[in-house]
Length: 344
Picture 1 (tube, rainbow, N blue to C red):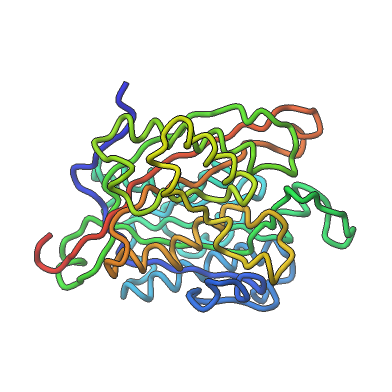
Picture 2 (tube, rainbow, N blue to C red; picture 1 turned 90 degrees about the horizontal axis):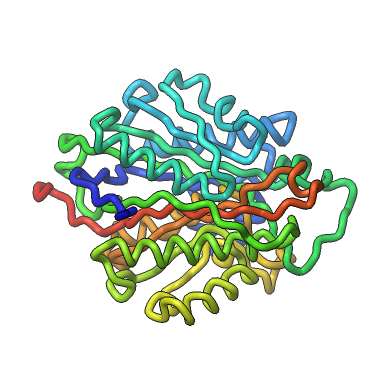
């Protein structure tokens, strides 16, 4: 079965925005974020509402960058880590845009981009917004314990990012004809559910590494694209532990891909300056790093092509307490530089 779908009408990133909190502002990419709130609250009373407002801000910034109003998009696809994705639905409810809520844990960003690309391909939506958010304080309270408890984290644990990434994808030529230096999604692939071989909720990077390896190997075996033709193979948030495991797998099974791997969970924070243990996690990690770093560099032509796969740990507080192994998933999209202008 050929798993990779090459898009006949690749959607273009018309604009994008990265929003974060205090820790994100101090990281290596802090200056590249469009907005960072040092209080992490975004003017709201609860952390859960703060995440919704953070996402709303990201969409507003992306729309403003594109010169669009709230009435222009045909669809918004959004997801987060809160139960029933209430941060996403609450954050964008006032926009009145038709909405699809998605959940792929930390793989949500790529899942949303994949679905938006297929919506464009089928002409269901020619102007789509995708949004992905996570909030450290909301996620810790839901998946582990409130921060006030002061629970100790293991060395393999990661720091959930307070971050959001919003993206506007379009196939409308009239919106792109005068623009140069763009990025397109040209190929997509759904991930498979892979047993992460661990039930340790404090070591999600290790659990997700096997799904990332499966997707990377599957993509290059199903696509005409080779590992040597991409600048980076970008995973979502394996962190330092999961990244080491992934590289070991690739060195054995697909050596050409091992040296091109880079992980968003190792890029968002400076772990020498801040105690983030094994790096960043949370679905806002890959979304914000894609918007703040990779897409601007792809649009500028400094990076020509990346395979982008956010990685998700499909677990819940109940599944962890019941001792179930953590399942991983890693959908993938191929993002390429596009000169733009009148050569559409």
